[in-house]
Image (tube, rainbow, N blue to C red; front, side, top):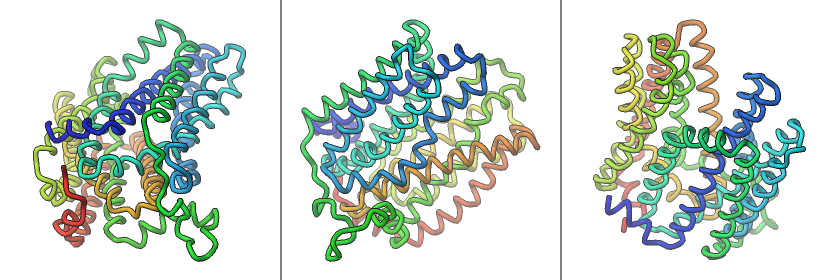
Length: 410
């Protein structure tokens, strides 16, 4: 715990962490508020669910097309601009007279601005934290997962109490507060080589080469490619999240257990992130492949149609092992070329979101054919097999040499 708390000794990290926490809390409010508002206006559960999905899908486009901004302009400026844009757009959404189609369009624009913000933030953190970087990532993982565990219930309570429009206004205020914190407390952080990217000596990179820079960098570096592979395994382990409702129905659990099923894996991830920090970094880096397999392996037990209590335990263990993503992500960022760091992060994050979306959709389709428990079991079996291949590839990357190449931990 002491090593994890060490990240808070860095003022810039404290500011970014608080700004991020404000934005996450505001986003939870906005997602719930919009779903409720759409349902109240239309009476359509399908449209309400589609609105919720719309709050995440634009990241598939913006992660690929806009992350290069974090490598082109001063990163503080990128983050502040994105926060100001989001604050203004959400403030317009809070106006009572705004029609639903316009709200949907504004929501897409809000989410498009998220990718360059995250890329700039992710590129700044290694510069701020140095050897404390993985500790900072562990803090981020723990707080994000706790927000997932607690956020929806709290958001529903707040929206019910103050109304959907007021909740949107609160979300706009959180973005404005985040912009003020970052502008006042963070240095300029210009990207290396003035952000010219990979086209030096040729008059600068073209727009297309800037966009593709992250994917090219990952494809040329086998270590980065393997780390991305390990990260994208989340497409298999996200399936139980998408099937929580039908699985609860299949085992005869009441609706109140759906939230518990959804919380089991994030709770395990919180515990795993704290537990892994007790081990030295070389141990954590060597364990990436084993833990990746361990994340999917518990889901194989769903072939036996476990009881609710057993299912919760299996999901908790899966989440516990999934904490390897903290070390994998931190290693990926620290090994990425500094002048391309925003784009490599954008590429990895876009693939993660796309994979999770594909996993949920495929799991839902499979559940229609074979039932929720069997669909989860198929996902676990496929995930474990792919994870075994990724683990073998990671072992060939000489994890001890990778660990030695990283900045010394503080």
